[in-house]
Length: 343
Image (cartoon, rainbow, N blue to C red):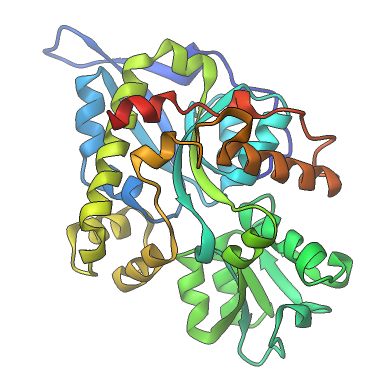
């Protein structure tokens, strides 16, 4: 969900993985750090129930799952060489690619849509988006929420961002500031979104803004060289993703607060089960077949993901958060892993 302050590329594969030997075995397991965020969906459920761990152990890998509070934090970890695989939003992916990180987006976790929203606090005097002029708005900088907030201000609501006090806050900080009454509004995702909605109301969301510009999404990226050196990991990892997303399509409508899948998500990211259920309803989860199609990862320069990265980068350049957008982002999107996993 994610812009970087400084990206100089990934370290070599040797710096990203350590070999761990287990007593009584005749082989070594390669330990890999995977960074994830506080987002809901089949991906997190599959972490919780051990499907990834089982499949990857069989492929010769053990995973150190590390949670980060935002995509910006994961971007920093990716750039430092500490994390070879991680969750990034479309904004962060565009920024990282523009700054020279040789990464590949290989899975779309979700189409964000209504799951990121501008929420006004009760008593703030904000009835419509234009009313945030002169107000304090919390948002995680360099996130997809930040991107769509700025797009909304400049291109949809016609409000000069300089007339809004935009504060850089991570989701937990937004909740705390909201409860203290320090901010008038916030643009954020669940579980923070679910919490602030208890005393606020949605005045716009990323589905509305996406229709006026480009959709935003959460995805998983990998260092290109690392992926090439670890084909067994990539095959096993995306196979679990494909199975988890197919399962959700078939059974996800029946997930309740008491479902083991929802309980697993709560275990991994916190929050309340009932809030997770509501958050799931706000997201769109592409099927394995849709992942590999022109809608998302396929289609080269005409594919949905490439177009979203291109437009995100252009806007970031307009905001002077990157020097200039690249002419082509198709080299940073790889639909082959999803295509193979869907078969």
